[in-house]
Amino acid sequence: MKNRTLILSALLAGAFATAHAGEDLSGKVSKLVADSFKPGEGQDMSRLAQDDTQKTCSKTRNNPSAKEADAINARERGNIKYPDGNHLMGDWKNGEKLVKGGFGMRIGSIEPDPAAKQKGGNGGNCYACHALDPKEVAAGNIGPSLTGYGTLRGASDDIVKYTYEKLYNAQATVACSSMPRMGHNGILTPAQVADITAYLVSPESPLNKK
Amino acid sequence: MKRNLTVTGMAAVVLSLAAPLAMGEVSVEEYRAMLADKDANPGFLVIDQGEVLFKTKRGPKNATLEKCDFGLGAGKLKGAYAQMPRYFKDTKRVQDLESRLLTCMTTLQGFDASEIKKKTFADQRYNETNTDIEMLAAYVAYQSNGMKINPPLKHPAEKEALKVGEAYFWNRQGPMDFSCATCHAEDGKRVRLQSLVNVYNKNDVQATMTTWPTYRVSHGVARNMQHRMWDCHWQMRTPDIEFGSPATTALISFLTHQAKGGTYDLPGMKR
View 1: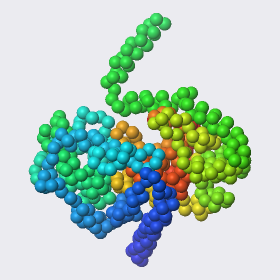
View 2: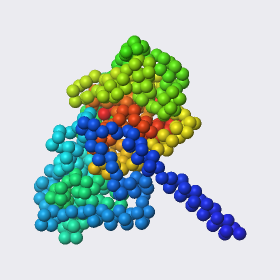
View 3: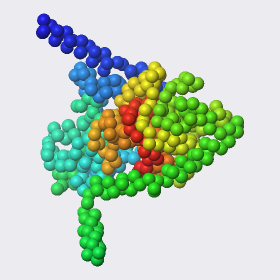
View 4: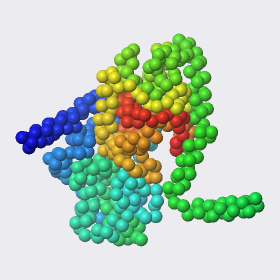
């Protein structure tokens, strides 16, 4: 009897929790977005259209089920593009410039970036979220510290490939990661992702110097 | 006495020597302490300008805003901001302070809302002074200084705004894949050296919400929550989110309810 009650209350609790957390508000949120942004000069409404990955991560509040996470990983892995000649180790010196740069891509009619800067390819703005070169103190902490990245991991082909793919599309390995899909979303080109890969992995990189 | 002076002098020398060695956090703390100095807050000038504007006959109808109803009755300003956002029967929607000001400027003074919306924020790049609606928001909000945040949650539309506002907080969009939650759902996070509020931490979110509208030193003007919502979206690389839109109002409803019970300390002053 006691067991049965326990099972029943566990079932009820489970059902209640599911009903509460699972209330799908995505339709209402879509309407909210449609009612709150207006097309016009300087606006790019296509930026508000969510792809399936953004939809799943929004609906589950970055907590996808194992099945949903597998679907995201598989889809995003398929989205990865590689640079010409498949050279995943680029020029670390250019990578250093790219991790520092990154302003751009802001649009609208109030304070848009200059037209040339509105497209991607300006840099990764990596210090916003990550520590990299130990000499740079103004580093954010939304993502993990990457100081000494190559010293810790070495520069094997596997590490280089893993790093390139992580930078190009973080959700290929971690579904609903906070990190923008830098390559997939066009913030960085494949060649630029290779340059930043070299900056992270290369033993000559200041990021790997004590 | 002379000895005391010497000791003080020595302490000052020690401190001044220590200062250059102190890293980031200490100087940031000092900067914040300076920002908290109410006697040095230029936001008070904006509040005074807002009061004059509020009581001046303006617009096609040549009327003041003194009969504006912010939820407690026409012309009742004291404590009104502390109980917003709220549902308004006349507009049949939930409104925050700024969207309500837009309503009153339209209905009482005869201004065209779409004209006002074309220029809601002063442009700090050109050293512009505050827009009318920025001054008015600073003034009306200040009439709730020292009061507790206590927005109503009775009308179904108020409950809906809170619920959908929270869902929108987690909505990931744009080329950065960001939602508000990317930066504002964990303790101790920073973009570069800028600390980020965790809206699920009561102390954190109260400290933020009780100090808006705020004088922003880097902009040289007083800003309101509608500007903060636009600014975050702009940084997230979305199109401009509309002033007083359903999404900004729902987000502000969610944030305000998270901060319920906090005491308004206005005007704020921030970086």
